[in-house]
Amino acid sequence: MVSYVQIKGFEEFAQYTESIDPNGPPVLFYFSGSKLPGGNSWCPDCVEAEPVVQAYLTELNREIIFAYVDVGDRDYWKDKQCPFRTDKRTKLMVIPTIIKWKGVQRLEGSQCNKRELLQMLFEDDE
Image 1 (spheres, rainbow, N blue to C red):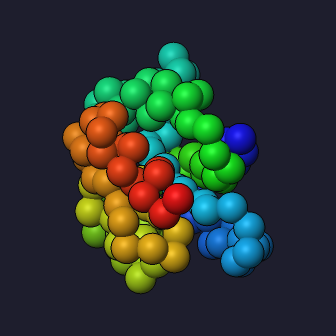
Image 2: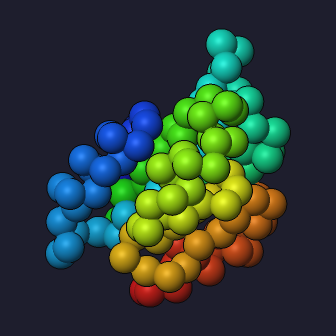
């Protein structure tokens, strides 16, 4: 079963990472731009990837924690000093990005809307 977590901003992200159980299910972080009033992200690539990722998660038959991380508005994200860009745990260059926590695997940008790549990322340690 997939457990969902919503995280808004870098401080919440940092706090959440402190509470991850190393013996618990794998944690995957999905980094995306803030949602606009209409419900979609300001980030066009995020808008494209999100339905593909969500559809895949509904079919996933294993225990994981899927953490949706709101990286903020466009100006905050574009700042070269944005902590999501500079933090050694994330080192984000583009959004959307999906990171397997405590692993080296990640999907970036348009890779996030490719079902076969999602399958490799989510299922490769079974």
